[in-house]
Amino acid sequence: MVGLFATKQVKTEQESSIFTHLWSSIWLEQNYATLEDLEEIKRHYAIYDGWSSDFLLLSDKKEVGTARVIWENSQGFPTLTDFRTTSLFSPKSDLCEVTLLTVHRDHRRQGSEAALTLIVAMYQKAMKEKKISGVLIAADHRLWILLRRLGLRFTQIGQSRMYEGSETIPGHILMQDVGSALYRHGLI
Image 1 (tube, rainbow, N blue to C red):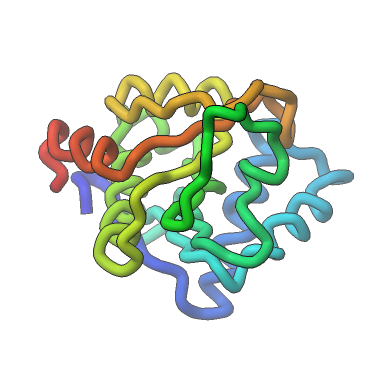
Image 2: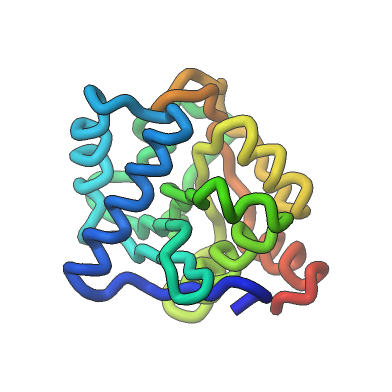
């Protein structure tokens, strides 16, 4: 728990339904998706359900945000399959991908606390249970800027492009750099 927020890992079918409803409603609200393409986007992310850990962000016991970590799997990672990465980026087998990092607009105004709470939960899961060395992300330009302000300096690994409603940048960061940034914030 970081200040006003707590996280909960999704474990039940009911929590999974809440998770999907929450990220998809935030995406509709923020114009990342339209009703017409939302079902296709949900199917795209459902492919990774069996290889993912999903998290709900809570404020006063109410769900206000989501995040997903996709672990190594036979389908690959969305960032590596949906973007053309540079030849300088060589993926390793101990990667994960962070996706569906969403926070309801009413809770974004509290600085970066909401995003940091989700990032800490994912970091702890990745380091304690999976021994991950690097993280992939496809971040829209607003999230990219926020992550950089937080000290999470992802390296761009391919060309940005329109992806799920916004200009999106594929990136990679070493887990040790995530840990260093969280340490500087006093979170680990």
